[in-house]
Length: 160
Image 1 (cartoon, rainbow, N blue to C red):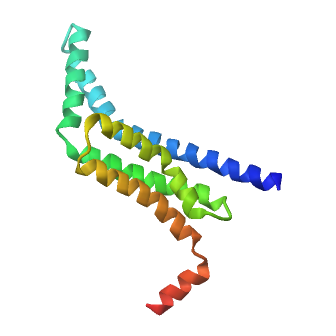
Image 2 (image 1 turned 45 degrees about the vertical axis):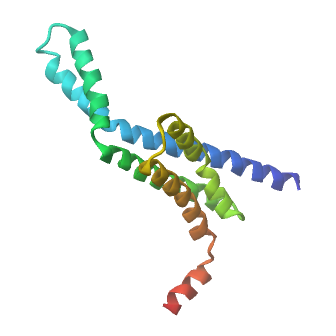
Image 3 (image 1 turned 90 degrees about the horizontal axis):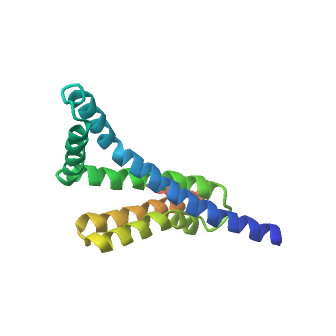
């Protein structure tokens, strides 16, 4: 009995950890364009300018402007993080024998709470609601699809 309880606790920890991992990976992918632009500007402006502080100031002005003026980067973050949540939820769910949907939703806990706290400070809009729906949907979908037995999938495919 103690071994089963211990295994259940490990899944909770693994679920939360995988949610944090999915969000961190999504944020790193989100920041890749900023690194590319910063390196490009550094190599272009560095040899031309004799003042490194001036180059740094130009880069620090260009990066936030790039993210403010491009809504597609925000949508990309939402989609990539949702896919990463689905992927990590599948990894956690494959190791559990029951409660696949709950374990899938557990992976979404950190990204959802982080998004809520971030959006409280900045204000909710359509993209923040879309973000929450996609994050929760990714965890739920992973749990739903992996909780179905292969016989159920074959039967539903043959009915169509």
